Image (cartoon, rainbow, N blue to C red; front, top):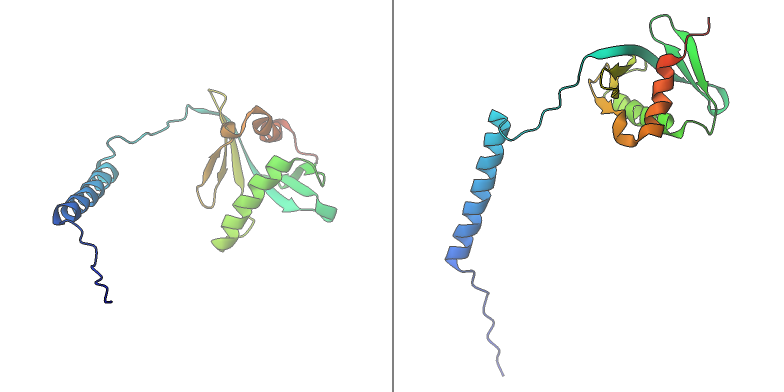
Amino acid sequence: MSEVFHEPVVPKGGVLAGAALILFALAAVTTVRLTGAGGTHMTLPAAVESRDLQFEDGQHGAVLVFDASDHHLVDTLAPGSNGFIRVVMRGLARERKLGDIGARPPFRLTRYAGGEITLTDTSTGKRIDLGAFGSTNTEAFARLLKLRSSK
């Protein structure tokens, strides 16, 4: 007994409709990218406070936070504490390592008139809106703005 196998036939109209959909999507994305129409742009209010900080590994798992302007110690984050700060800084340090950027360029912590706080990597320009992670996590960084250098 012989069996006949038929390849499935895709209707020509279906192929044309799929191709038209793909071309429309590409045209729409290109138009939005080139004109900016439909895009959302967040404009931050004026900065009211800013501080450049450097983070370094200390002994026994501590993280040392220095004021970048005078390299005086601002805070020592004990091992097992300040998990949010450690995670954020680890992620930014990883990006710097991939970009072959050293630890010298500071991170800029900024508070804006509306109360928003951001952390910016001055070497890559990457900005993190800390408010997106909740008030407790934002406060972990906000306290670094208030601490004075220990000389």
